[in-house]
Image (cartoon, rainbow, N blue to C red; front, side, top):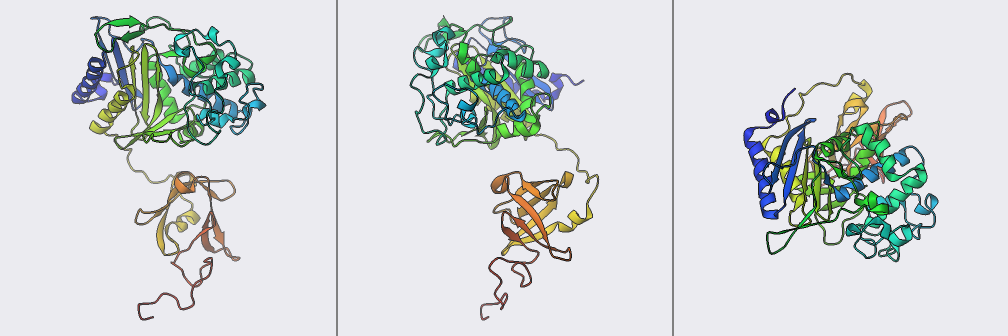
Length: 460
C-alpha cells in the first residue's frame, strides 16, 4: 500500500504545512490539526501546537459544532428513503405540538423554515441543555422570524426540531439512532456526542493579549443534533468519502447527491454559496466545494470536499475565534487540486451499443440553434448546444423509453423520441421543445409551422 508520504509531492506537502502553520500562528490557536484525503486515502496530515510534544494526530478528538447538522440530515434522508416521511410533509404530521408544525421537513433541512437563528437566552452554546428541557424552551417566540420557504435563514433550533423528529419516528434517542445507522456502518468509531481521550481542550484567546481562558464544554441536550458531536480528522475524511460517493448501507449515491444540490437561495448579500440539505455548497477559486463548517466555544471545524477533484480537507482548531477555518480548509483543497490535478481515467469505448440510440446521435436543431446529441454509458444521453452557449443537460434512461434530465435547466424534464406512424424518428420532444434534424425543415414537425418560402437571401 502506498504510504501517505508517497501520495503527494514534497512541495505540495510543504505548502499544506505552511498554510496550516500560518493559520495557527496568525489565528493564535493553542493547536490546529488538518488532514487531506485523495483517491480514497489520507494523503497528508499536519499539526501545530503551542505545547511541544503535544501536537494532535489523526485520532485526537475535537468538537465539530455545526458539522453535526450534516449527520442529522443524513438520518432524515434515511427516513425519507424508507418511506416513513416525505420531505414535503409538515412537521406537525410527525411531531405535533411544537408551535412550528406548519413548516416542512425540507424547509428545516435547508434552513428556509423562517425560524430564529438561535435558541432564546441564555447563550445555548455555553449553558447546559437542562436549561432548555423541552422544545417550548428551545423555540419560545423564535418562530415566524421570516415567512416559511421565502429565504435561507440559518437556524440552530430548526435542527433541534429535526433531531426530535428522528426520535419520534424511530422511537429511540437521536444519539443512539446516529450510532446505529451512520457511525457504526461507516466505521466512525471515534465520533460521538461525548469526548473520549485523546481529545483537545477548549480555549478562548484574549483579543489584545496572548493569554488563554478555558471554555466550558456543555452537554447541549435537545440542541445536540445541531452541534454536539466530537470527531477526528480520520473519521471526518471517511465521512467525506461517503458524502462524495454514498454508501448503500447508509444512504445511496443518489440521495447524497440530492443533499449537495442547492435547496434555498442564499441570505441577501451572501454571494459565497448556497445551502443544500444539511450541506453548504460554496464556490472557491473556481471549484464547487460541499461540506460544512462548525464552531462551539473553544472549537472551530471545517470539512470541504471537491467531488470533481476527488479531494477532501478537514481542519480543526481548539480556539473560540480568530481562525478563518473555512478558508483554511478550502485552501488545502486548492493546494492539492491545483498542484497535483487529478489524472483522468483512460478513455475506453462503451462496453456495448444500441444501434437505434447510436442513430440518434449527432446534430439536432431547436429552431435555428444547432445542438449535438451524444451517447453516454448505460443508455444515457447528453444534449448540448454546438457552440457551448445556451441550455444543455445529461439525461438518464427510464424503463418506459424516455429520458430524464439530470442537470441545468432541464433537471427533471422528460426527453422523448417521437416517431411517425411507420416507426421513423420524427423529432425529439424535450419539455415541449421540438428538436429536428434540419433547422426549420418544411417537412419537420415545427410548432407554428414553417414559412412556405423557406430560407432566403437578402433579396428573397
